[in-house]
Picture 1 (tube, rainbow, N blue to C red):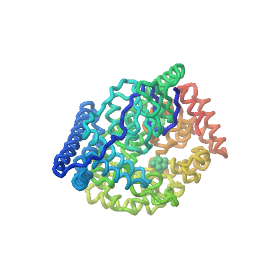
Picture 2 (tube, rainbow, N blue to C red):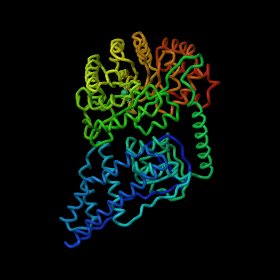
Picture 3 (cartoon, rainbow, N blue to C red):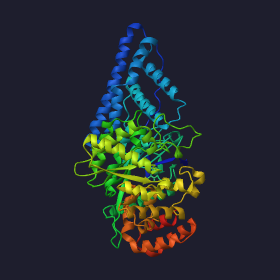
Picture 4 (cartoon, protein in one colour):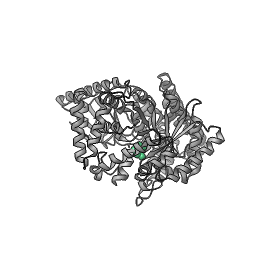
Amino acid sequence: MRVERNGIAISPGIAVGKVVILDRSKTIVQRTGIEESQIGSEKQRFLSAVKRSKDELLSIKDKLDSEGAGEHHQILNFNIMMLEDYLLSEKVLKHIESERVNAGWAVNSVLTKKSEAFKDVEDIYMKERLADIYYLGERILRNLHGVHEDIPMLDEDSILITHDISALDVVQYAKNKAAGIATDIGALTSHSAIVAKSLGIPAVMGLQDITLRASPGDSIFIDGFTGTVILDPGEEEFEEFKKRKSDYLDLEKKLLQYAKLSGRTQDGKEIKVNANIEITEELNLAMCYGAEGIGMYRTEFLFTNAVYFPDEEKQLESYKKVVSALNSPEVTIRTLDIGGDKFPAGMEPSKKLNPALGLRGIRYSLHDVDTFSTQVRAILRSAEDDKKIRMLIPMVSKLSEIIDTKRIISGIARELGREDSWEIGVMIETPSAAIIASDIAEEVDFLSIGTNDLIQYTLAVDRINEHVSYLYTPFHPAILRLIKSVVEAGHEKGIPVGVCGEMASQLSCVPLLVGMDVDELSMNAHSIPKVKKLLNTITEKDSKRILKHSLGLKTEYEIREYVRRAIVSKWGESFPPEFIIEITSSV
Ligand code: PEP
Ligand code: MG
């Protein structure tokens, strides 16, 4: 019977195929009392199950190595480390002894206690770490009960359906060809979601009861763009989905051909096209999609995905990967931007507070100088001898924040003997920073306009509140005038100005930004090929004309309609049809 569900669109792409169920249901354990004489052997049984679990993980690691998927080691290492230094082991051993119970029951009791302690914790990242411990616990229980890991056989059209999925399962099965993933539970920020995205596997999570509805071999369609999943569609509909998938793959292929283009308009104006990344696993995608450099590495994930803030060496490891991955003169590492909409474990603000206006970005870093200094040390140490590392400072709202930040960085650079290894840039994302951009430009090496926040703060529209999303638009005259003034301020002081918010990847906005003389566009890797193609089709001269006319209009509606029409009538014939659809449906 046809079933349609809408879940969370986790990883873009379209998949059509057959259901393969990955059974990750909870292992049922019964309580059995044991004699004092059995305590030793029960403890031994538990330790053997831990060892078998570790062996399993090591063999997955070997397999991934041989398949060249070594970049996902950190997830495996994290799991192996937890097994080796398994915090719960001690508790389980004690529980077997004090309660005189079987090992399975002891594992279950300790895990249940742990989950109860976390029941009311709202922090999503903390819950994620608990989930990792839960997955490991389940692995140990399977091994205690002699249940061998059922590794489903996957074909190229297999779509993995499971109640919940660990990041490790995503790595293991995706490398094993899964065409898509659909789960009952899961969140956009989960480790597994990030990994699915970085591997380019279409995924939808949070479908609630998909495992109850699906049977092995059922036909299924998943749309990782919208979060729609359809089980058992009729024959005609299934054929239609197959066509949608092949159209999507054709488009991807077509777009990939543009990845090699250079960032240059038809009349020769050069604009750097860089990638924004959140995790180092995205570096490969960034390269495939033609990133010329890394315009913004959002380092928050290093912090929000861990129970403790990462130390200097751990951070250095990640920064070095970014620095050495692309053969690019430019790598921009954004310093920690927690607060706003990204919080590490235990730091979620009270619901009454307004985190977007709170202790966020550089405000947090100047408040917790130890954490900031550790990050700066790691960034400076990651710089290669012949290249400067670019640090980008988020959420600046006044000049003294930059002066203070520079003082801290210079001090550390002196200590490390790396005075000449760095450049500093400021994210222009608050209206105050935009208005004093000229003064800021005197202090720094480059500016990068964060339009996601600049629009939010300038128009007073919460960027994640769907009730006011109709007010959120880059076409507002205040936004265009502000961006133009920032670019002019930067150029007057002789420094480059880029845009790293979503606006940089919107086809209907790019000609306006080109018209303003923006030097760099930095965006999610997927958007790079289409933006390069657009740049290669348009001209700087006409972009300036479009901008000039737009700036004379008074409302966002007039501007948007004019820009859409102007782009389509000037260059529409040279664009792939999908571009026209995107341009004419832009908000
Ligand atoms: C922005 O605000 O435009 C930006 C790029 O930063 P983030 O989306 O991480 O806040
Ligand atoms: Mg921002």
